Length: 103
Image (cartoon, one colour):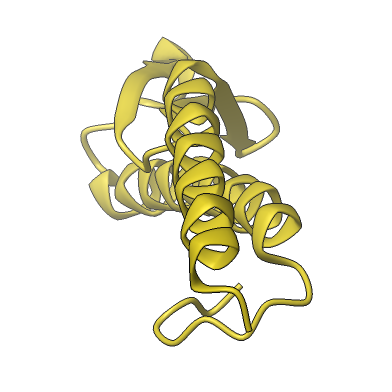
């Protein structure tokens, strides 16, 4: 086992991971609910970046439906971003047994 070689590989992987994380932060993941009545956009870090609500869905008598649509759109956008991040990071760590890395 060559420790210097392993350290060099680990350093290269860390640089690649930082690059992928930066790229993911720049990507947008959009998800709509209610047939497009509510659309949420999140980045690859899992942060919500925007939300659009069609005025037709705003009914003061049915706030619960609007809440459900917003929740579904936000949850979907954040999940898509996290799944993309897991896929990208998994590609970097494929075949390596790294403790604490669920990819």
